Image (tube, rainbow, N blue to C red):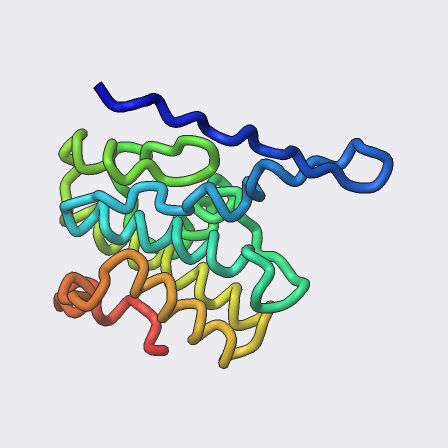
Amino acid sequence: MAPAVEAAPEEKKKGLFGFLKRDEPAREAAAPVAFGAAASGRAGQLASLANALIAEYNGGQYGKGRLDDRMANLLMRVDEQADPIDRPLPIVDDRIDAQALDRENMPEQQAVPYLAILVSQIYEDAERTFGKDKAKRGYKAAQQQVFGTDASALSAPDVAGRLPRP
């Protein structure tokens, strides 16, 4: 039987006056922003892209401005432009629940064009807030995060005309 190895006690680092602990990593860096990233259908993927765009643009790396991230407000603006859909989109914590969208089998003929207009609306807001170059960079980063190298879902004819061209 091997002798037990004693672990050295970890030293807790404290900041000024002992109340600023540095033993926990920053929560912002630890929490990934991949809400709905595992969506499989085209509607779920577009919902994940919309969620990723909002998170990307409001992350603080494109400027001090912020986009309106209340999904209800965004969807009301999309309702003015898009054809109506039979059922409301599933929203959890002001983001579209992409997995629930896939689970509920919402008709893609309705949801996909609607979500494409939502993505375009978020992109247009980012152009107004941050400028064209930063909006393009954020769109490409969110697209890479959701689709990786295979963005074929964005080139379908019912979606391609409604999405922004960065």
